[in-house]
Image (cartoon, rainbow, N blue to C red; front, side, top):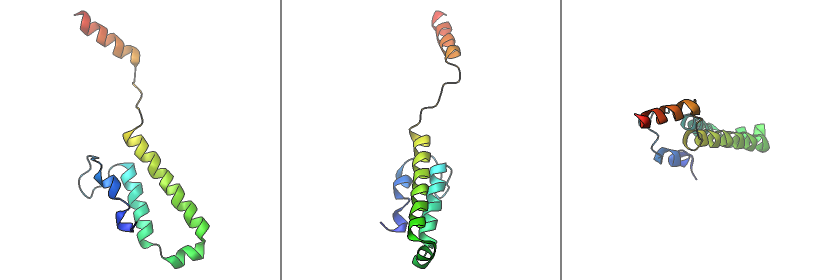
Length: 94
């Protein structure tokens, strides 16, 4: 996979963000990760240590994963279930 392909899967999802605009946290984090891959040179990785570099990449991927989950799959709590139930029963009684 080339660095140009890193953002492609998320770009395909209809996020509602205008082309070129990164509005979701997942988009921003993935953009940061893509930039890190594009601008990091092998000599920098060797100097700081491969293990440390891989750890940073894994942590970044975990952040992207959590942001994608929160944006697309996490359920949001209903503010007040009792109020919702009352409003539904009131509207059916009328």
